[in-house]
Length: 253
Image 1: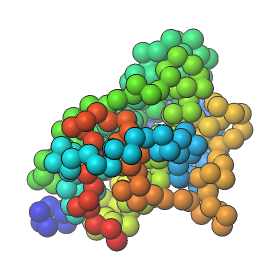
Image 2: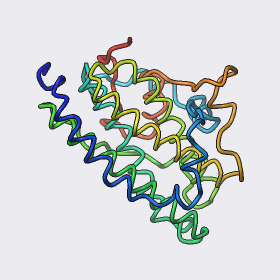
Image 3: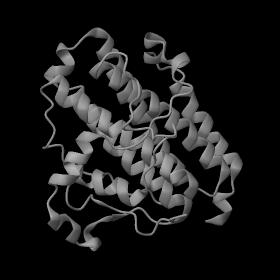
């Protein structure tokens, strides 16, 4: 395992594979965010996710750990953790593209949502390849539970999209310090920058010219972050039994 973890050449190759399809994306050019987003600090949980946490059944805390998906430990565990979150996001946007809302919304929003769906799918497959290249086994394909999401309306779709993107950014910010291999950390940095742009454009679609808010940046202007335990406490609400995540074996610092 340690041999693979320090295989910077292999990791760099994966990074290049990731970069190539991302360069094809179009929505940043469309919105002009490529120039505007460089200094924005995005992270954290928003009201939607907080509501989910408040309403979740307390019995969820007693979920049998043996029935959960253990992401593992070390760098591979962190990669599996990211892979799980990318699976969740990719599944969400795949469903969004099938909705009446998507078909009826404006052309710019359809372009952006298609691009975001493609990005999340690329991220998902990238992590699967990276874990395999590390000589480890990726976690299984997760089964999602989006029954609490209203896919019929703009507010229903975009409010959850914003919540997922903010959660993703906060998750990468919180997990970065747990990664030991420099090449993997660099890759995570690239991906989180894309996720931050997703968060920004979704916010702008919800309310024009609101790329970032106080809910994702602290009073010092620094990005908020979340630990894996905090993130999965939210993410597990959107995963079926047998697909909920256990991150107890990840490093904590």
